[in-house]
Length: 152
Picture (tube, helix red, strand yellow):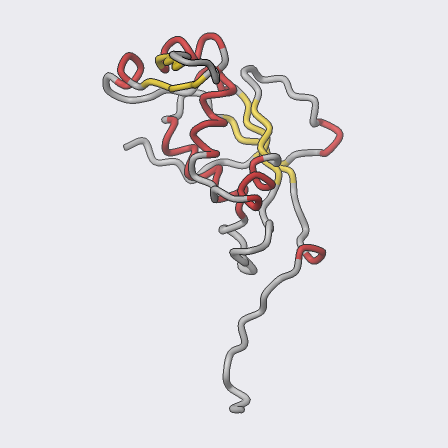
C-alpha cells in the first residue's frame, strides 16, 4: 500500500465527545433553523462524522414560541394527527399549534429531517425545546450557538 494513501477513519460511539449547545430561534424562519439544528444533532458539522454512529451534540432550543413562517403558511400549513379511533384524524394549523404547543412545531420540523430508524429516534432524544427563554439545563453549561442563518 502506498504510504501517501489516505485512510478514512470511522469513529466509534465511545470516542464521541458531545457538547451542549443552546440555540435561540426568536424571529427566525422555521424550516431554515430546523435544517441547521438537524445538522448539529447528527454531527454533520464535525470532521469525524460517521453516518451509522450518533456523533452529534445536545441542542437546547429556546424561544420556540417566537419562530415564524413565511407567506400564508401560518394559516395554510396543517399538522395531521391520528387518534387511533375510526374517523379519528385531526388537523391543526401552524397558527393554532404555535400558540398551544410551540415546542411541538420545532420538534416535528427537526424530527422529519432525521433518519426514520432506531438511530434517528436516538438522535431525536438529544433535542430539548422550550417555548420561552428559561430552560433547566444550566448545569450542563450549554454554549450559545449562533446559527449560520440566512433570512431568505
